Length: 279
Image (cartoon, rainbow, N blue to C red; front, side, top):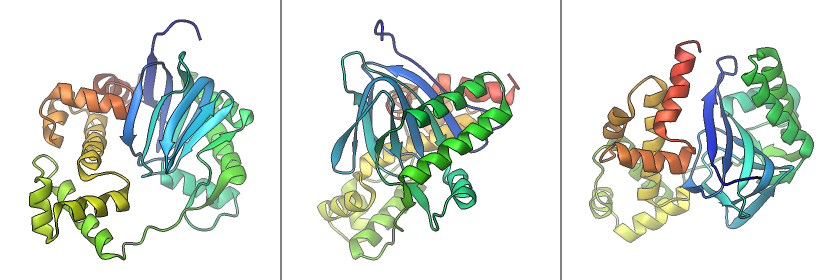
């Protein structure tokens, strides 16, 4: 890859409902630990991406795919000095479940087993999906997406375990999460939250991290960015979205949004506005 310029586009295609799309080339970009509500299917075209997933670092190189299930904490960064170039589709759990029910024998909540696989054919399919949306070819985009998801589920799919809240710690973590969701703009301190829930700060921290894979403050930042995305989707300005979700100002939203979504909030909103305007 020549040069060191980073470029990224995050968009939606009106004829692929429930699917986000990304095409990017990153060199210095670092994604902080975060989660997605949708699946991540990232097809690496050049370079290497390194991301922490579970308890280990994963390496996805050219011809490989990085595959992340919904609500799974992970990071992202370049694994080589020249960075990495990739295209990604982010189908919703509903889209993947529909495809799995129709084309696979998976019974239960479908998901990916391994976070990295080498499959140049699937990589090519993902890039063809993105190219079809560029060309306005709805039939091709929809068909290729279904073929790609089906193939990946057949070679690397399984049933995701159900997350059951049973232990006292998990129940406390779930209650803490509900409080943070409700009071996102003005959250309590860890000490105050623990006191409200009848536990200690360190016990709450440990229970929350064990249950959701993130400490409460990191989870809250992630949740704020998710809610800001939904606001930007319907035309709210970045400045208003920042204040609504609890960021001090727009620059704070910009920093966190870019480190989780991969593009600045303004660029993200412009792509959504283009869809609304029929561009």
